[in-house]
Length: 251
Image (cartoon, rainbow, N blue to C red; front, side):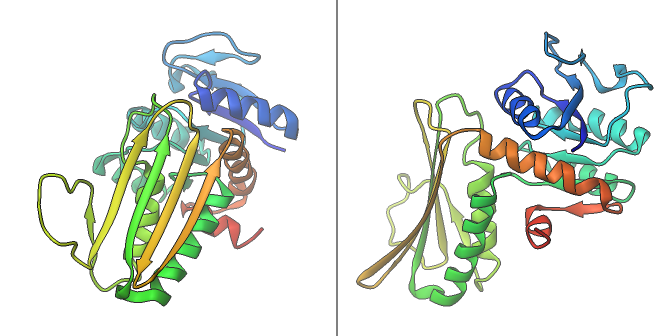
């Protein structure tokens, strides 16, 4: 059980984490939401407003990537590990994470689902085994309110696959260019509609056969559960950058 400061506490994922924490026996000791609001715990509009006597074991961030610099400054000042579950970070924000990890434990994953991270490992093995004789296409589907495209998870999958191929080129749009598909391509496609929580499908298309590996999340609870598992695991670690595979190997 962990005492948690939850950034983005009043968003959809914030509510999911709060509910899952209550079920697990974790405690949200404070929340952060830039617009403020009501919750079963104190909510502050900025990290720096959290009083010194509010103690915690870890921070979970499900807010927005632009909130990261202030949150990292706060985490370093309080010597708190931080689980970062937001996506869409700029290169400067990624560099800030890396700098912070020299002083505190930083856990970063674009997707907190254990199932997705297993899918990524399976796709890495499939790409290594099948080689360049199979074309790779990634299709991700999310709800119509999702802001970034492609999803951070789709990019995680693409990066894992590209890591075991000699050459790769990410292709997001083919309508403007009439040409035969290059074997180096990894096609990445985003679908937005309705209330789809998250679906990812990876197709390996070879001569006369197709292998498809897919994952579907039917609720946000799977991401909340993964984040809380990371929050319980991280406080015992030394300063450094950590990701889901690091935790999964120890489970």
